[in-house]
Image (tube, rainbow, N blue to C red; front, side, top):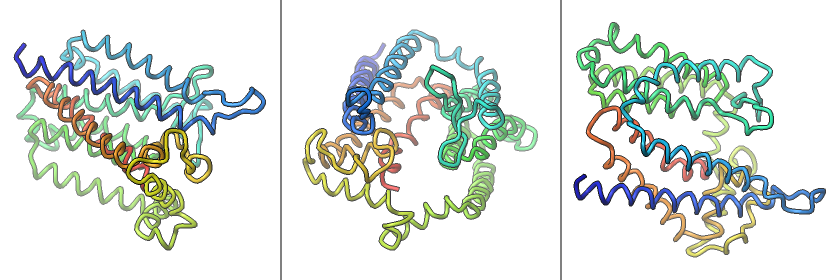
Length: 325
């Protein structure tokens, strides 16, 4: 093990533990009010307890994969993709699919937390394509006989996500496929044309979606739509502005009470800004950038490992973007 790896590994673990701990604190603060139940004696800590459960599962998974040969993940790519496709079909066409705010994205598992298959699809797509393309450079040069057959199964899965509908996840999945294709050494002409067709298709879908157009017009014309479609984005920015440099204090945020939806998930970055200020939000952004850099530097010089590491890159700024749009 060289000197760089002796530094990178522990640094990545320390950053991970720091982010997890900070996340638990903010979920506790952001979710305390909406967890209030007078029939159960006040604050139930339901959201915090749920997050703590996920942290425990994540820690066990981290310990397992820290001692697992990543190259062996390649054999699980195709089975994982098939399983996720089945789960997506269950979400859409079975009584276990859960509809929330006009979309069916979750699978009801009874006493267990609901499952969102599109999140697992991201990892399945990466492992599947990384395995298919890691040692097939000649195949990547041929679009119709090489690239397209591998894209069909992935395209089916992404199409099911779009049907839910979950447009943001569809765009992220498209970006992930493009990133893997680029890392694997695909031809730029094929990548450019396919990307253009994908973006044009997504543009058409969004243009014909009332909710999608409301989100776009609300973002572009926030002053005119501040009391309508742009209400949530405007209030998130007000929360960030109210926090100033050092914030109102942990637990003292006002906007999480009634002005922004899902303060413990989608808009938690706005809660961080209001309660802890720009020093915390700016520092958090820098930590995410450092996390991404460490992950990429830690990856061995093989395409499958690089692809899995780069999975984190497009998502690191997601909390910031989601809280303000």
